[in-house]
Image (tube, rainbow, N blue to C red; front, side, top):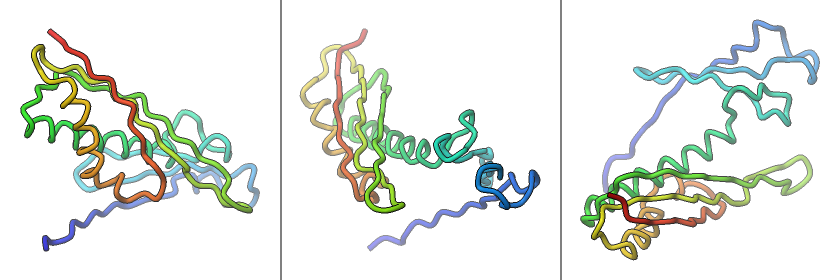
Length: 157
């Protein structure tokens, strides 16, 4: 068995300088995530929970992590499978719903990758490799809700 991978970050509630959490309606939800050697990420809560709509929220970042992990897994299996990917983009969406009193959770994520492969490539194989990519995506393997794929694969120049 291989050694587990460890990840570390530092999260700081930067909104504290605007005052304490005396009032639910007025305290700042802004925070910063620092990961050694990488650019900082400034975030907030979703606007539904009085966050700053101009900043990424944890829900955005979960969706982004699933989309990026699938893309990276897909590009890897395509390279190994001799499929030449020319471009890749995704229009991902996630659904979060109440699952109990004062409890919400993601209930589904749909990835809609649009892939362009080199002329003469195998479109059906390229489409099928999304299933393999899903099986090896670390983030998809870590969530307890369905992550569906609706890929489009076409030929490019």
